[in-house]
Length: 110
Image (cartoon, rainbow, N blue to C red; front, side):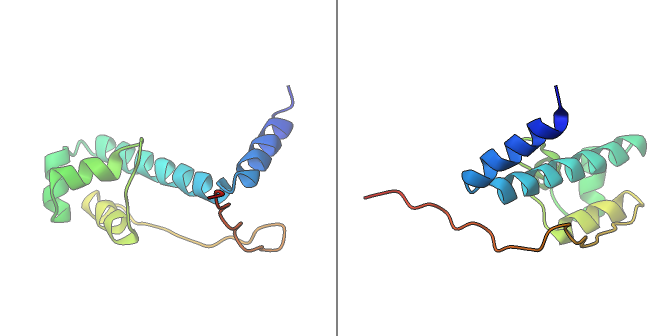
């Protein structure tokens, strides 16, 4: 199978559903949550200790690390990185094709 075609058709499918950007953002959040959790484990830092270092609750740390639906802000990710003795690096990368406005959500007929 040609993986390029699979990815292309998945992108097209999500684009047609108006969900491509949402899927991309969720994927990025999941990757970031996994990286934070790997750093936490590598540093042998418990959830409780990470929460203490971040000045937040264990529940907030669990939410940040939850791959099913990670909730995060730049502030929480930055505090998590600092709590683990790491730096957060962010950048905006230009796309190969010109930027187009996000698709408008389709309205259901009444």
